[in-house]
Image 1 (cartoon, rainbow, N blue to C red):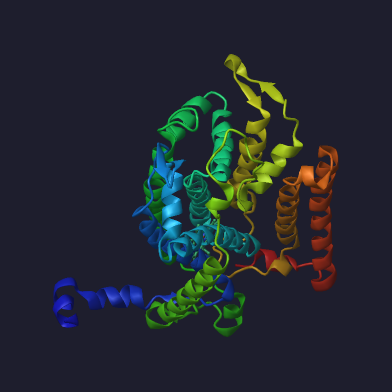
Image 2: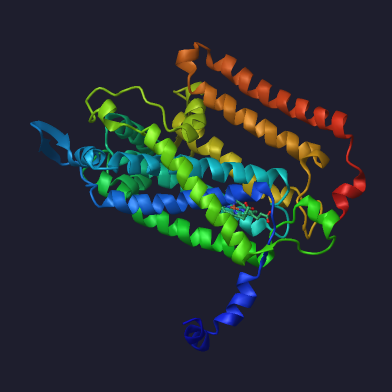
Length: 415
Ligand code: HEM
């Protein structure tokens, strides 16, 4: 059978070229793979969910109660054998994909893998992270329970706050003032079609660029085989390792999903006139935290009568500035070109300290999301955020210098 296909498709040539590709081995390289496995799991479980989900807010009667059809259909999914588990695995996989993509980004950052010639994959990766978050956010609104409807309403407010184009953006995404009859079908189409297709195309590009440029080599490769590409062939070793990791991923996510059912909508109930006090999903609480500590009545006038309000500043401008710095990073850090090996974090104290300071910023802004519960003022929270980020920078920087010494100049310049 192989020969039959080989004669027609020249498989042997293809196999020699691609299946023998050497894949560098390092535990940190598996994090990107975990994001990939989470995505595959999301697509498969998502397809099952679409069989019974109804993207509509028209009211239907269920056991004498009037409920939005979307909410009722999710209740129905939960009542099916393994339905709640599949939905839970879908929800957990979304969280795992975002967490894995972010930890993967930190790995790229701390090992300098964003530098020339890998800038393209750094940009593509940033786009992937944005698309992943947008896909998760649009999915959050679909059960249309009290919690998700309110959280999506906050998203609608943020979209509308964008100067000049806000109204239009919200119209396109939500089909009018949220929630209209058009909102859920639009968000549904974005969630199950547009964003997944974009994610697939962007992921394909990410992998292509990685294979074409070759992976950075782990630092041990410098000692074992200096100047040579060290790794295991894609077939069969890398394929075996990845399959084992995928099966492990499925075992863990089904255990977690089956034990802790994510987003139990019957607990929240359908949307009501009174707005429940909700926070966004964990990966957006830092943005919500920033919104809590900037003055709510802040308004900066812009030309032609537009204004920048606090919603825009906290949830678009500040995250946007962080994103812009990330985009510019490969142009700001141009030391050492033609990077072949991962750089040791201990040899790059400034970059490592900045990475930890960024983490401190994200943790403390997330903490600010509980401003009311903590009983702290906005000023106190700002002091904690700025103080802990600076302190983390100084502690990490000097700890590295004290323990590993200053990096010799040639370490920074050598290829
Ligand atoms: C959202 C999902 C993402 C998936 C599924 C994904 C997947 C992967 C995989 C499997 C690899 C090869 C193994 C590894 O180095 O871990 C890789 C490499 C890479 N990724 Fe991602 N990635 C994602 C997001 C990102 C993000 C957010 C960034 C950075 C902004 C990024 C930048 C890179 C770079 C620069 C490489 C090459 C690394 C090297 O040669 O050392 N990726 N990605």
